[in-house]
Image (cartoon, rainbow, N blue to C red; front, side, top):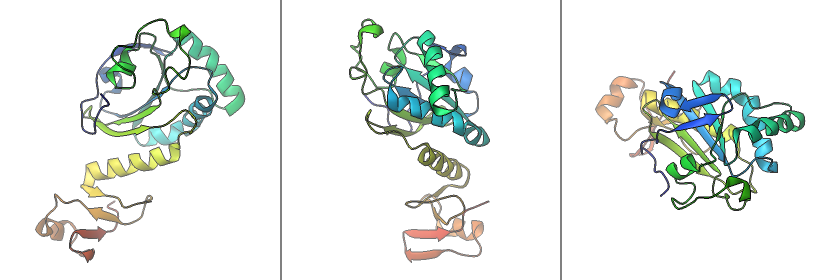
Length: 219
């Protein structure tokens, strides 16, 4: 079954391009971005890995550790990294999991529990469902899940925007409206009563409806 929002992010041990890791230990107290790929040397994924490498300073700035996964051996990842650097201008600068036993893909609901066999005999289409993005909080719970088909490249600017919203909400208990960007007004969370809101926002708020309370983005 697919993991739901607020589910515990499964812990695991795996071989990566930066050595053996235990996932929760590797995450520490950071936010995490785990994004997966059905197979190495696939065109759309090549562009995505280059995009995340280019944006890594933005993830770092937000305290987010990035880690990729592909259902192929780590040795293949290293060869793929050369192609990524050549074609995208940036090689992966974060660990890539070699999920050759399908363990992580199954733990995270991306492949059926019955999946088995030799990864080298499987095509990208066989692993087409391994195209997820998981944002994980410092509490090791799933905060966001995105699932993409193989034909649609992921928008990592949108993922950064969503992380900004998640982190703002975690700190200030606010929500963000459609198409929100940094610096724009936000919405007070339903758990904040009007009495508490008056203390937090003595300047008041805009309320086009009683259930929509709009305030400037907290600092």
